[in-house]
Image (cartoon, rainbow, N blue to C red; front, side, top):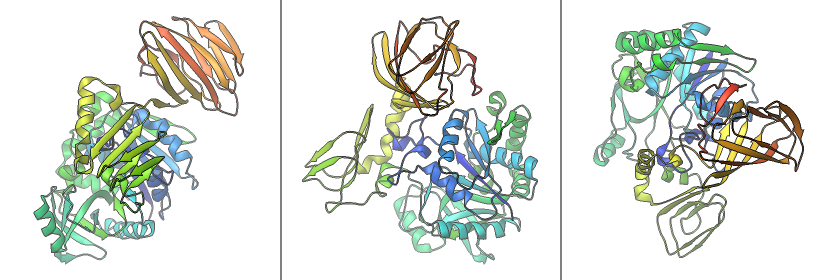
Length: 483
């Protein structure tokens, strides 16, 4: 049977701030082994038997970043597709859009496997076996969920209750879905033996899930269908891309696939599995990926400890010293530091909410920002000036653009730059520079085979990233903010 994994990459992961931010969300967090969650999900999906394509549903601003992450690990060279959301509308919209797209491109009999981009699965062999069982059930018309064997009474997950008296060939029929319980109720679920953590992963035949959606959630199917009709499809040698129309997509109901469909359908089954699954939902969960020392401390980076126990420190590029402290989470990034007790790890999202409400950019961006052509890092930001380190990938190019309020001075640190500065076109080598006055059209390109690194000094009365007018762009951006 042919299979298309559908990777949903839409969550921000606010409980994992300050590493996870809106422009660099949880799926892109590097783990101790050097890979990030979205890379691991892509690899795990692409290695499954029968895979003919990998389809990713993500925010349109993350397309090029996702493509870069996949490119570093895509040794199988599967065909790729993307559905680009202008903003999140929850999982029912994403699953419906993927199903409609796959029906149009592969027909109703193709199987789709819905995976979250930000989950970790340690036992890939057991995962592959669970998927094979799920596909067998899906081919018989079931909507299949993956129920994780609970190892303790977790209160942060939803649960799936399976019918003890209704075993299927390779799974169990689902009796009901239950919300996140209190501790006593969760312990009862674990003791009962027929309750499983709801992993948020699904497998179904495309035709089946669309039939069930049309019966139980017709408004979602109708709204997503209208959205796709108004949306733009582009194709290249690398992938096929469906960019959803923003105005139409805003009318799609904002609801999860569990609420919209799974809780209402009589065709839901579950595959109980023990696959080393974790949703890495907080810094407590993330800390478990690092081995503890004799004092129960878990350290990443350069950390010194004295009379301290049961702490987790992610030190980034800075030395951190602990003296006489216990049960702390300390997360260091270049522009923000989080310090919290472990028993308050779930409350980190409240800090993100305060950052948003105050208009502080730390909920959105890191000091280093990824763009389709490379990255820029803000080194210093003062009154009427800003200093950036810009890295442009080989053969990449920034847009032809103009700024109303700022002038820029570019100094090449390494590599070679081709610069358009008003009517002038020039080549710059290491230690050479050019000055671009406000109001002039300009463009920066890297014609070489190594990264171009330069320092940009901005000066002017307004230095916001939205002071930009684009005239030409290789990445389809016309009015979006940022260089």
